[in-house]
Image (cartoon, rainbow, N blue to C red; front, side, top):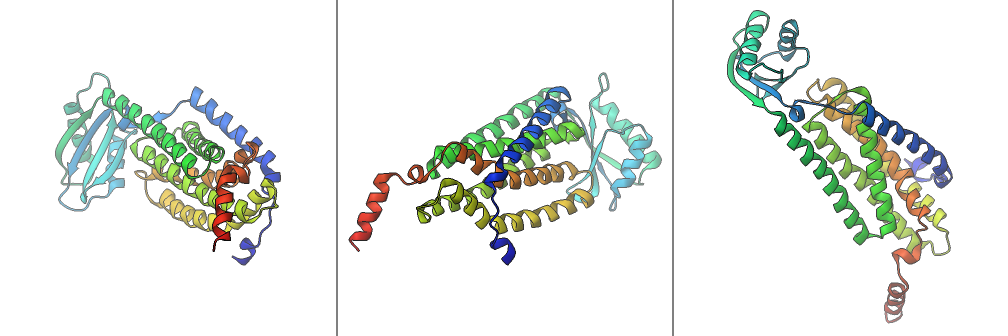
Length: 313
């Protein structure tokens, strides 16, 4: 920790390389989204949800194997409320009614799945509902970014707000690009993870911005480049410790959490990695490119008022 606290890395000088890396990742993500698009899950595309009850705790791998044997490869199986229930999500098939799907699923489970399965309910999610969720999810991301922009403008300055929003867009676009490139299902849990990434990345960026504002007040004779380098170095230990412990938890969820939480953990993992990178290289670098200085954060009138207040003490 002492070595991390005493770092004096010239992060600004690495900014040009960071710009190249970010540009390549953003272009690759945009190209993947334009060509391959996202693979939406049942929550967005519509499908059939089958609720099955068992007399005792049921093994989800056994349920999945039974569905695989019946040809239901594209399915999601998870516990619902307790360990003796299974919630099965299947994509919609043209011309096939939800009741027929429910009967076929029950036949497959009774033939080669765990014994004692009883059908509780079968629900159909129409594509119109899925499209509505896509629209509302996109609006949620947009409104969140707009609210963050307004908050940072009032809290700091529009130059820092531009850097914060650029970092957030950077993180979200790269995360979406990873999902598009790997064809992982994009469902409501992944959307929730993206909103969590926005909050995490913003929190990390605000910590750096607070230190930048504080150092502009303390380091009167330093240049903006020196202030930003000092600020990032001073918050580096906190950034690495927070991100490191969070990433270790997410790695455990990603590899051991099972297929239900796989997409959620993957989105958070990619988002936090990019969020840590962007809080160090992207947010403050853009503010520096916009020529942020002490007068932006502390206008002359405010400085004069502070001096007058100190003189009267």
